[in-house]
Image (cartoon, rainbow, N blue to C red; front, side):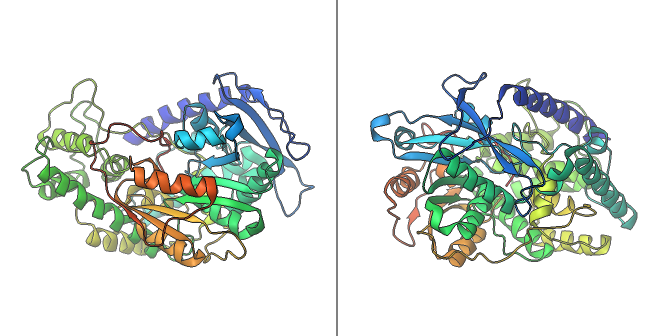
Length: 499
């Protein structure tokens, strides 16, 4: 039951925030191209808010509509303005409007030349929302089933949760798929008065950009796809294994950094042994937060690695692992877990985009064991596991299942990736570049979201492409920036923890 309280707190915080936001953002439909009714956002000085109205079901536009919220910061140099750059922070479930209002942007050169426009994909935040039942959401359930009975309990939990989302959200609950979002993006493009789309998407936002290029290749001006989803993975085993191998590889990078960095809290210690000991304690139910005595389950421990690998925050991770291993309560300012809000839209979108069947406990356990064999330290990728198991028993069909990308007639796209990415493996971006014929720019460093890793090389190449369409040479690599050595970010990264 320890996880129930954490979920309840996160649910309450998010429900409150989205309720307030819904009242602050006026949902004004765009009647014609370029006719958005921008109004100052009540909660963000210098930012304008608006919304477009789109069909819930693009195949049957007469069956109801929903709204998609927008937030805009105008270009700082109107005389040099090129147009608007639409941005999405990933998720699924990340709020582009909140990110832009909180200062998320690309470099100063891009914000000088472009209006920065964030949007909340359908179902998210200030857009028409997919809502799920609080009681169903916080209901206790096994996150890592240990037998067939617990597998069935997890399936029942997911089924009831999905049914509550459908009940409370109406038809929108079954139309959260990314292909529908891509069509919404074209409606946004038209409402902005842009003849062609300029877009930056990171993580799950790359799937939106990929499918936009498939559907509207003649409407693309420039698409930057940073840290890519690979929608051509067809099996559950392939998906989970690629996710888990990526986070194990970053564990190796973290351990190597710690050994060469005297300030690391675990410098000189056998980090692999220490970590495996913690894994064993978690598996026995004996690992506790020394501050609160709350039990840390295996998936909680996996999440600690996952969350700290995004930045990466290796110094913080080393401190947390030391505290767990030594059993010493941390100071008041330290936290063992990141404040990661539960994303209620996640299964409604992910399970609509991915058909990754798991038929019974024996099959799931086989996947877990194979993944753990390839990742002896971290055991599993918590994000990949949660995504996969969240669709077991989900009541809605997958309307937008995996397929190899087919992009014909679009201008060249720019694909970015960190070489060591814990959430969207480098191999995924390689696959997207190969399928689309796009240029892949590799950041030879760590973390999720290559543009925000303090690499002047990545930023300049991306900015040149967004401004002029000029691509870096194929095979270009940008050198890694050692964690903790850079003085400032080129721009603020999105706060979304997810894909």
